[in-house]
Image (cartoon, rainbow, N blue to C red):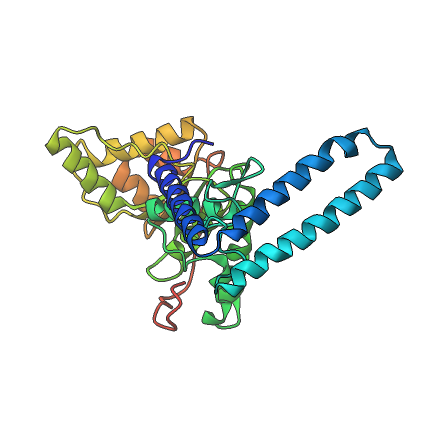
Length: 315
């Protein structure tokens, strides 16, 4: 797995710092307790002296020689520890002080990514995704909804969204539209999905439709390449319908994103206040057919009233 250059450099610097600190400690011990190194030499000599006899001995002889060697080494290692502690140093003093002892600041354990590397990459994905990490299924609070039809609806939508996120990208249809009035949980459900898909190792980007169109305008005015948003495994387009309707730009650019992602078989989640009729009126038949085709998209209308003021939790 190729690491981002800055993360790779971070690990390299951490290893170099740990080795440099280890060398300083070695020199300190050499100054205050030179006997430590004569004992260490004796450890190496004993290991070497037993290597050939053990290799040539029968099974019973091997066991006897290994036991004798280990007894001698145990005494010498205890002496080394005593020399360190009597000089006010911990027994681990000469170990390289790696930030992560599991991988020795390499990022890998037995060829697999270390937990420390997984955490760095996840944090990186979070920073690039523009998701709020607090908006997750673990924080989903059904108590925000009164008992009855609306609460049962949200429970079903939570379960549906969890299933989508757990099975992504092997889901069909690939796209979801959460539609409904302000504050009923459209964005929250979208981010819950995004955060779980992100945790599972896929790339996710959330962008408000307004921000997307503004970035397109800035690119056009600056002569830069127009962002396509085709790279992420999952794209979340929030607040569809709030973006400025600029002739020859808004509809065309949205269609390009939607169409290209459909062609690439990549998932897109939308949150919008617009009804299907309003989508067709605002964007035209091409986008409407792409967004509402049952083979491509599941259209979910969320009923209810604005509950964002009920608690601090933003469902």
